[in-house]
Amino acid sequence: MSQPPSQQPPQGGFGAPQDPPHGGTPGQGGPGSPPPPAQPPQMPPPPQTPPGPPAAQPGYGYPQAGPADQQQPGPYNQPGPYGQQQPGPYNQPGPYGQQQPGPYNQPGPYGQQAGPYGQQPGPYGQQPGPYGGGYPPQQFPGPPTAPPGGAGGGGKNPFKGKPGVIIAAAVAGALVIGGGIWFAVGGDDSGDKPNVSKSGDAEPTGSPSVDQGDGSGDGREAADDLNAGRKDGEARIEWLQTNDVDLPRNGADVYGPWFAGDTVVKAMYRQVVGYSAADGKKKWTLSLPTEICAAPVASTTTGKLVIGVKNGTTEKADCNQLQLVDLMTGKGGWKKEIPETGAFDLLSDITIAMSGDTVTAARTGAVNAFRVSDGKELFGKLPGDCQPYALTGGPKLIAAESCTSGGNQIQELDPTTGQAKWTYKLAADWDTDKVYSVNPLVVSLKNDEKDTWSIVALNANGTPRSQIQGGNDKFAPNCGGSFIVFGQNLEGCVGVAADANTFYMATAPDSGSTSRTNEIVAFSLDTGKSTWRAKAPEGRTMTPLRMEGGKVLVYLDATYDTGGAVATVAPSGGAPTTLLQHPASTAQIENSFYSPKYAYVDGRFYVMSGRVSASNDEEELKTKTMMAFGK
Image (cartoon, rainbow, N blue to C red; front, side, top):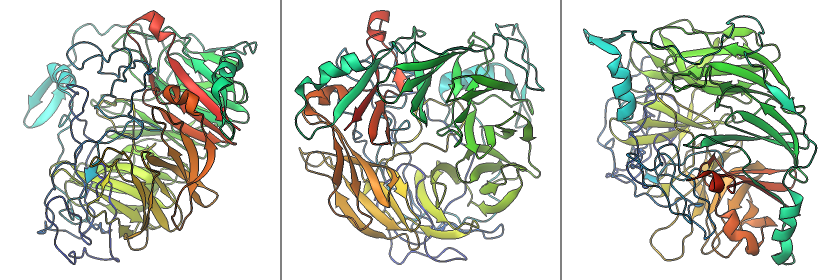
């Protein structure tokens, strides 16, 4: 079984790691062995051409909780061969596909520009899924190396695995002294940066403006034409949006969608826009003076969202401002500057997570938490030598942390005080990569040194519950999306789902036949073993999105001549049951969205581009950005 780097849970019971019952050769999975330790996130080098570099390969390991347990590499802890990169479920360019170069996919040194009818792979040559970028399929090689507990392998290289251009820029202003890095500040750093107060609820320089709209936006008229070829039993195209924003030369990432009542919201460049879920017409537009640079996966239950914006309009601007947005009204609230905590702070991009009335802004080695309701800072640097570099929110606030004394760990934090509720130590050289589920907690771990990864399930108190046993299957969850410099985003993976007792994950599409298809595999969270497999319809692939009414909600991809579909798979397995069949007449449009994001809310299915860019202004304004299907 294969998965993206760092996505396998611990197996067996509690206590010291157990040796697997049977050996595993590279490329084969084996039960038993503790999950590995985490290390500060490391970025891959810039892509050279459409197919991105192969992702790290997963391996099985059984993580043990407890600071003292040292796990030694075992005979089955060798990295397996890299999984072959297979096209993701939504990577089929359609004849009407919009050209969407990713951050590095502009003509020039980092990538070839896609032709007018093809889609350009994302920053790493991977097609992002519903909430962002995807991993190439990975195969579990075997149990991970050292045990979860222990001091770990010493300090970390902050530039390891980072794009060469970024490294060169950072090193140009640094002096390496005695094994450490001291930054020498010099030159003219004057830029177009507004004065923003570091305290109080100060409004930003150039306060955001809200246009409530007159309801005359794009929407129903264009959608009516698309419904002309709709057949009985097929869903209706509710509306189709095209880009109406003049973007910078390299385009812009799209954040969202978020939902508040009957409003669907997306953010891009310097705007946050709310649309009517019924007809797609604009309800309001919040214009910002600078570019949006970070956003969480979910808003609060009351429709409040905190996004990250830059502190200026030049290339030197930092992503260090937090802006509150009311998704119901489109009004901006408090704005805060994230305080710097050291010489290395803000060298990496921030990632934002929200849990209850708390929003966190994390970057390598630092985190700051604020109260959503009024912007008051709740906590910053935590006690001890371990500090969060990324968090994920929702029902719990989970932090991935690196320690100056070596080794990495996972903690659940109190969202109001930052106090740790429990700590799970990772084995040396292991890093927390993604969080697939917060409740129950399922975490993807990776070991960049050995190109292996693992998926572990933890109990509510942070003790190990199981490690997923992937076998020889290949998996390719879609995670991330935007290119993050030196940072780590734990949220937003699709292709995975979990309920109280089971973890569900989609295999990579089968490349051994002319008919492309895949399966969903269910794993017991108590044992880590697979319990059933559900095969997608012939010639289709299906991707788990989340749980819906006790069933696994999946998206069946659109093909050249078949519309996509929303379906459910029973918790006992079996064939998918279709909830919403999209029209075959618009399959090529549905299949053309770049880095697509998906959402199924109140009986409507939304597909949204994850990035908008084009070779010229005319094509840019023709780019399809969001489409809604309904009954």
